[in-house]
Amino acid sequence: MARPQDLARLEAAFTTSLAGATPDTQQELRRIARYRAPPPAIDYPKQRLAAVLVLLHLDKHGELAVTLTTRSSKLRSHPGETSLPGGRWEEGDGEGGEWTALREAYEEIGLPLPPRQGQADSDSPATPNSDAPLLYLTSLPAYTSRTLLVVLPIVYLLLQPAETASTDCLPSFLRPNPDEVDAIFHLPLRSFLLLPESTSASTGRTRFTYDHADYTWLLSRPYRLHAFSSPPPPPSSTAASSSNPADSQPHSAVTGLTADIVIDTALLAHYGTFDEGELPADAVGFQRRAEGQMEWTEIVQEALKVQKNGVGGIKGDASRETGLGAKLDGASGIEPSDTRSSAT
Picture 1 (spheres, rainbow, N blue to C red):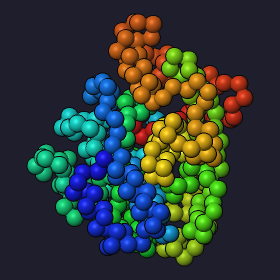
Picture 2: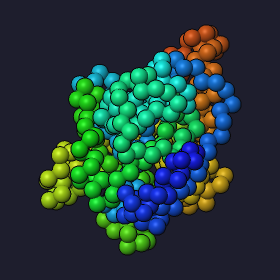
Picture 3: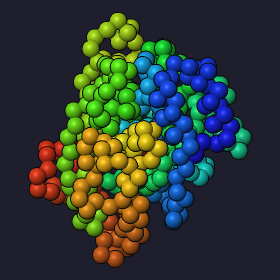
């Protein structure tokens, strides 16, 4: 849940930098900011902890878009795949994952660091920028990567007008670190729900091609791997003049843990919850989970148990449980290599 001062800043911004937000977008932001994740039932070991940043901003239609990256082709692990900015916890990051996500976003995409809550600037990896146009909205519950890291998603909002966010503001200070990121791009958050478009404001919104496959994972239970693909935007004077090369280039599909986190963020914005039991039957235009798939709270607990005791009770022997297992009957052509998250 957003801090009281952040809630006040959000409401004030609706008359200034966020004045271009549609009424629906304003309500979506309020829903996200009022969400409070349940407290974790267990302590997460720092050596198995990571965080990702879900960075939202207004697009040119006054609707929410999410910031994604294409991993550098120079990397040995999963080059060229789509992820959220993020990475592992480091000494000095503190609790909750917030500073881990911000620090990693600074290192990967040059996101200005806001002042750190409760700590002096000298404790930071770089000098925080008191004018950084960022607003903390909320933190989501823990997820698990396929390498059994506990991943904490942190949701922030970029306070920039709709008419400048995608063309002037974003490329001016979001710059990919070439050692880690090939490109930065932005996709409409609501489109990840695959809902029928019924309003004029939806005209021109990116339409995804959706696919999925089911695999066995922890405890031989199924896991549904989602994949969202979108075509590059059509050539335009805006794209041609943009300093962001990803504006007019195709990118890899949004899959795996990255897709799961973005889907849940979109559900939270649209419905105020992503709890299966509280959502309408037609909340999304696809089936979120495979039959028998565990909830994320169960997956996280099982992943930590595997890391602690190993498979079959052999301490530290978790090798057979890292990564997805066999593809289940009737699954489509998505491969486990597409499941990468930036935190793995």
